[in-house]
Image (cartoon, rainbow, N blue to C red; front, side):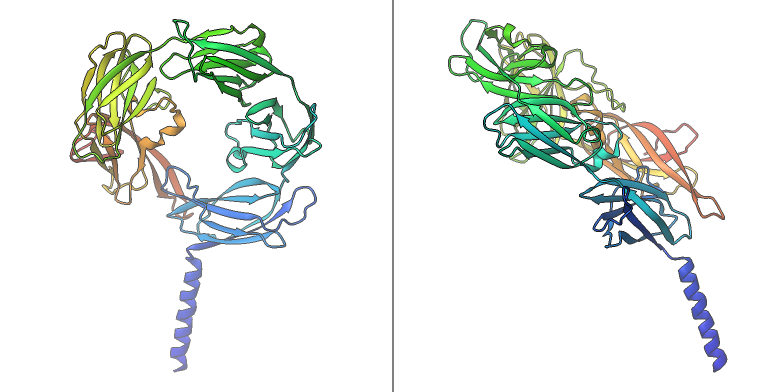
Length: 513
């Protein structure tokens, strides 16, 4: 009986030891201290994000979080499966300290990560005084952080700060970062102070004297010298460096007689522009403006108009919309995988799907390519001449959209490839006038656990696909995974089938149905 108990205890101990050795969790410990005096920092928010072995992009989902105690120490438990995770990122946030982001490689079979003492720098402050007016109460002081590429502060810190002056014209900002800011002071909707750069790391106090405002008066008329009411006038102060921010100093509208009066902050002419605009007219923009030399009468030319009607697919929701996107007649409408090859529309107008008639105004006389697009509506193009469109045009855009489906597999094993990134090419009609390269992730999807991906709401056309996946192979005794990024580019038509695409295939076959 004793022998049986001994065997049982030995089995239990071996099993428990095995469980400890193959633990699928890891604990992270550390202490945050003040850089200046070394004292612990309590109540700091600590968050971790795990980076997955087979993922192309680092995972920035900070799902595990805790707060430091009175001694500045924190402890977190995270998953620890080497076949799934290979690194973790740690972010710490505190109202009085600069945020910090750290990254650590995960070591197989390691279940304890003692990060030791981690120093944090305090955020900065800026005090200021405004002078030059009898009543100094209630001015709005605004700080906007300069654009600094690839700087962690841009992601972790507030971009803008605002404060009000007190009865003595004093204001104060806290929780600033060691990056320059553009400072403006406004009264009502008019900016009365503009400072291109204020760096709280180099100065903690600033004195500002209110500048003089210049008065600009004028009249807006059409080419027949008739007044234009409700024309918009904008005065803009441009930045002196690429990192700083410009500012809309003030704006106004013309009255029924076309007259306007606007008070503009005194600004060096090379940084000031005046824009005059009215719907249906060509805007006029004056650069390098000297207020004293601005013309008293500003003439706007009425733009040409294209009118048309459209036939849309049946069964669209009652609240559906379609867009008319206007391109130059010679615009290249080929698809692209290059985020910098942005053949953007020059104009965009939305209309309700219940309205078949559309009007596009404000065009120069000449030829254009118009595209009708929308959810459930295949892109349809038509040529239009804004200088000769007496009877309007008719666009037959009654084809519904389609879906592109695919299945990604490894060529050597035939196994599906999960978490692969599939980027499809886009056509110019899918873009917007304001599109920038960083907004094009809407043309990208990730394969599911079975290697499947899908793009919906597409126009029936040919698309290029750029597929990226991580091929992770264990290195043997170390238990680490060697990660290799695999690329493949293919071209497929949209069709009611699923394309099987192999990564690593060497026979030149791009895909199979």
